[in-house]
Length: 291
Image (cartoon, rainbow, N blue to C red; front, side, top):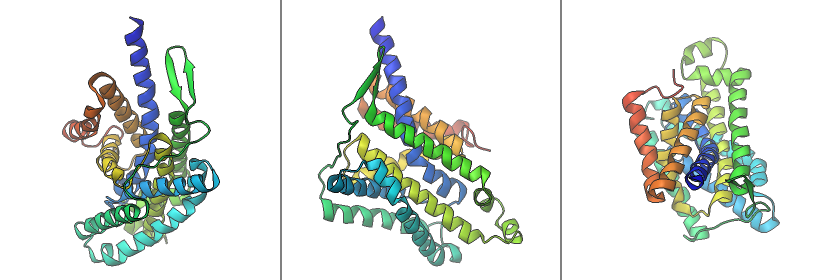
């Protein structure tokens, strides 16, 4: 009787730890897609790019990948500003963002993937940290540090983004820009500038999440495709534009995948995100915490 109990407890803990990581992957989509209505299908490409930058610096200087990601996050922020400017001038300003803008981000996704393949090849790359092989045990429950450390930093980042969006003027402007850009203009705020900075924030979170990914598992350039459905599923499941909803949806999905892997096998786990997405669209289209 003790073995199944331990198995269930470990599945719950693993699911929560995985969910915290998923929240970091998805918070940028919650901003760009949920708040700004920008369907950035290339979001996982920036996650993988963050993984490889962390891998390079870790191999060169031995710096922890998560520390690397925080240091280089301003570069991802600047990249986000540049990308949104191109997107706005070429597509959004002309009212062509729906289909051609989507094709633009598909192009960014594949260009990034091909560039990484040409530079690094298709072999899996991984990093070793001081805590990679460490596991804490509390009774029958294991806490692998390669999951615990990214979980703690991920949740801190997501909560920080939420507090920033709700307790600063810029954050409230981001929340308002998707609802009533005209009212924002009447207040003397440029909605395009606000959207550009918010989109840059979403790219910066993707770069940081990339470091979490390579701490947790080996990566290769095409692995980002596996997360396209997952990040959008979490965004919709949690509620469009809700950061707390993204965190909750990530925990739900993480626990569901953990139980699926534990009791039915890991090959079934990828179907869980799409199953939950369909269920959310069918029974609660507004999401768990959506308006």
